[in-house]
Image (tube, rainbow, N blue to C red):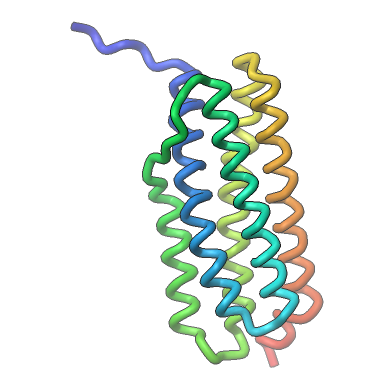
Length: 165
């Protein structure tokens, strides 16, 4: 029996599962990163983004409903690797002036992965006629971009100077 041809719908669902699993991992990672941060501004940024990530998970669950599928994750090896890198930085730079700079670097790697994934999902959702799903995904993309910009601002204004001192 011939294997069924994979479609853009299949790819969309596969990537949706990947991002769903990634967001769930990020929730745990943000809690640890907030606890490790040495400045209030960075701690607050991580805590705020954790709350946003809760809403992002809920939006993804809505998208799963829209496509008639049960919300389920598929292990996201890329995110597992990025989170593992973050843990290494937290361990290796604990107590150092460079810790917050390392946390921001790790968090931005995660944000950039998410920005890439959500941009792709939005494009595919639009191609597949899923305008409502695209709108929900766009909300999340905007939050990810805003978080990335905030992290850049924190790094540029104080964190990197402190690390270099």
